[in-house]
Amino acid sequence: MKSNTIRKVAIVGYNRIPFARANTAYSNVGNKEMMIAALDGLIDKCNLKGKLLGEVAGGAVIKHTYDNNLIRECVIQTSLDPATPACDLQQACDTGIESAIYIANKIALGQIDSGIAGGVDSISDMPIAVSEKLRKILLEARYAKSLGGKIKTFLKLRPKDLSPLVPRNEESQTGLSMGGHTEITAKYYKIPREEQDEFALKSHLNMAKAYDEGFFDDMITPFNGLEKDNNLRKDSTIEKLAKLNPAFDKVNGTLTAGNSTPLTDGASCILLASEEWANEQGLPILAYITFAEIAAIEYVKNQQNLLLAPVFAASRMLEKAELNLQDFDYYEIHEAFAAQTLATLKFGKAQN
Image (tube, rainbow, N blue to C red; front, side):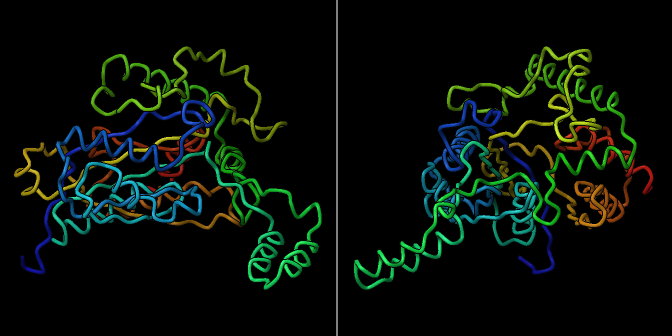
């Protein structure tokens, strides 16, 4: 193939397991089990058993140390040809998308003909760390040459050193959680509580309708006793949402458990391929990946903007594609808070 030839990248398959509120249906499983289930479902749907793919890429933001080679370990435990390469990628809130871009670029450049991209995260199976002093003493004791030396090392410990370090849902630079930052976003961009509740209600009702109409039937593989996402509030009403107390700013906040996304466990993946490979395998070309963009934003001084980087990414991508939002029948803004999505729309309009 000529080095200057860029091939079209097709999406030819997809699968995910149901998403579960943290510490519910998937409390007894971790990243590996969930990712394998998502991959197995895709393999079954696309008849990939025994096939050698170009590569599988994915990852998780929250990982145990023994998950350092997560995706490769998952691939080996599926029915794909075990010679299929795999690698881990990680980017907060964007691991799956970055994995898709990674695989798509390799296909476009002719390095591979097919590949799977995915992502997984378990809030229920968070790693628990030890204190830094305990960690150092354990390492020091490991290399002590005698039992007396080990005992002498351990005697340096104090009770407080034995306390576990539980992961905290906060940004290290600001000490605020995503919800805490979004409270600032809502106030700064003047997103009222009523608009947030209305948007959240519409989201849940749309999802309930999608389930009723069978939209998810070919997308989801049941896992661990769960057949549907259990974070759907099908019976939600605007009156119920209005009664909820603020979740982050307890005094003047507008974000609640009703207009915010719960911490969730889940895994998903897609199959990408060149048009030639898809045709050879008899797989339908569902869509193409044509443009992709990533952006970052300063949020330590401008704390209202932590989660608004997609506005800049979308603007740059549309400019490169010579398109605007009005050229699309549908587009998705996939975010964790109603206030965040509404601020994204408001901020995006201002940018334009």
